[in-house]
Image 1 (cartoon, rainbow, N blue to C red):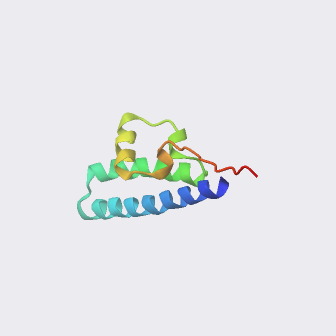
Image 2: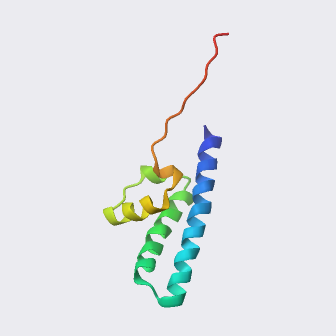
Image 3: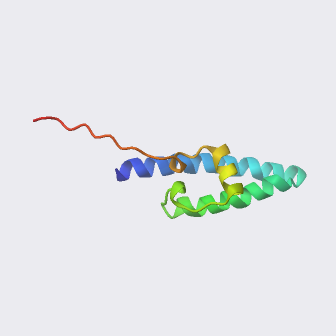
Length: 88
């Protein structure tokens, strides 16, 4: 289970890095205010991932949730574990 958690966090880190790079480009090109707000939220997400915590376990404001929903982070979604146990 720990391996699964680490893999999901790693995937979210990749997604986060790409999203932050896109925000940085918008900020550098046109000083985009919505991109600045998104970057601030993504920085908070980075702190959560760095702490090896799941995004869904943190408290988020409505604006933050809107940004998180756009990103589709794996650790922001509910998780169900299925275990296959044999009879013998």
